[in-house]
Length: 384
Ligand SMILES: Cc1ncc(COP(=O)(O)O)c(C=O)c1O
Image 1: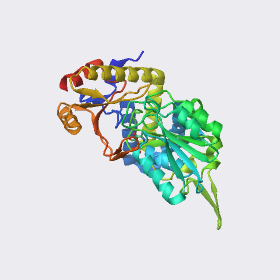
Image 2: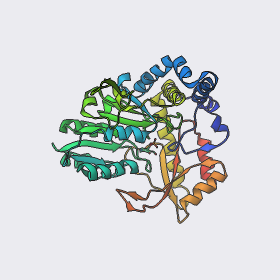
Image 3: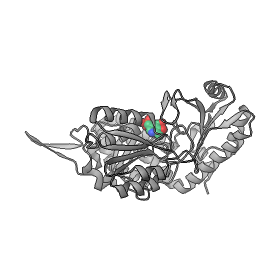
Image 4: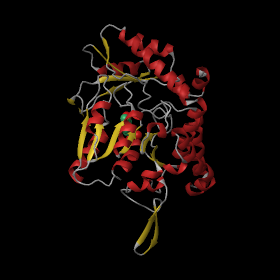
């Protein structure tokens, strides 16, 4: 059982706001905040390099924390400054040849879709959006029917940014593996939200961010690369961290996933990211997943009873991301009038989406976390 009073007491933001923007950036718990602040203080007092030297052991251990969070080994983790950069390092590292096919899903994140188009233009790959099933998730039948020898990569999100659905990532993993395709999972919205095990998912690469459900600092993210996939990728750019300069004509790549990193980083952010992973694991990812999905379901039920409100989420299995519209009311106006009552939600508005085309209808996104309460849900409903 989660001790809600305790986790709220450890979250300074809970005293300030009703925070339903956890899919944007969650409220940080005190141990994360203190880890970051302490390291910044140390940098100010003794110097940035000297502070990193003093924290060398903890910086090294941070890979183990992130690895444990997703069921990986420490040498399969690269620390980045965002989920996008982590995903990019995997995607742009693909040794594509013209004619290679890439399969994705209709709910894919916009930045990933732009990278697909870029690769189609630059490298001659063909990107195909696999149809949804009747629940709005990627259709396993459609995927199985289209997989073939020429599919080099299956790249899908675990939980989209704008919808409550959860994609069946493990079933997709089995199909991708059987077809010999590499498999990249965008777990930006699911790490810290659901219990994740890269072996169960069967992915070769998985990208995540620090600031969302993991409750880490902004400007942090990480990439998991399975050992067996390491040499099937070519890092897009190299520096003296990702490779060693060995002679006038030679360099050697690092032997682990850190070949996807660069030298300069925020040690305070890295320590804060690891502290967030440790904090989530101490609470328990199964308990977090249960609580977040229960609160999400509760919020959907309560919203559906508000006259004029339509819950927009699809998915046979649903997450803590809840999206809705309210009659003809402008979702941006709803978000700003809730903000005036110190209730944080977010406007979800894209310029284009695979599933809805140009200018898809904007919606309000209210994303719950385990530290939210039933009373806060009532407050949101009352304010609506
Ligand atoms: C599904 C998904 N993928 C990727 C990203 C990008 O994450 P970041 O902003 O950390 O690069 C987001 C951000 O909202 C997201 O929701």
